Length: 262
Image (cartoon, rainbow, N blue to C red):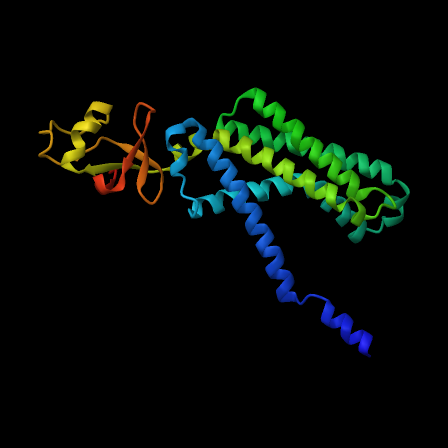
């Protein structure tokens, strides 16, 4: 009885398990989103330091990246595992493990090609980067499924290698997504007009920020032309202008933000 009680006490509760995996998924999501955001800001080197580390957009972006990446990597294994469990061909699967392993690898490669090609169309990533990412994803997927499905293997022995493969693949995938993320963000963000403080109008005009009407420098507040706010930090806005240039505006100089009328 005492040994049973010790075993029960030693085993983690459902709540502890949920909290552990939730924390792990949250950390991976934030890490993926943060890497992608930093890569996106490589287009705007003067504003990379203004990335808001507590922005919910980072976590949301990372969760999307993690979902797609994990789906590509583990989909072949999950599919074959479901076949083995739910269909009456378990003996066939065990007898022809190598054939099913090969099928899992091929499925992972094809799925990687499909996902990366679809993402590259949306984000307009270069062909070279796309081909490189297909190779990375296909390698991670094939190797991971080979380790998981290898007959007679002890998963515990290959757990460390699986974790390393997963993290390296996720890092590469997040970087790749970040290279095309700026264009996606620019498309999704609504067009707005900014009400600028009088003392900032002259400087912004000199920088080429468009305004709706002629202004008296230092006296008139100015309403900008149609722009998009890509991101914001605690002290500034990152603004995309119509000509494709990006400017950083301090928040105290922006008195109001008005959505563009359709």
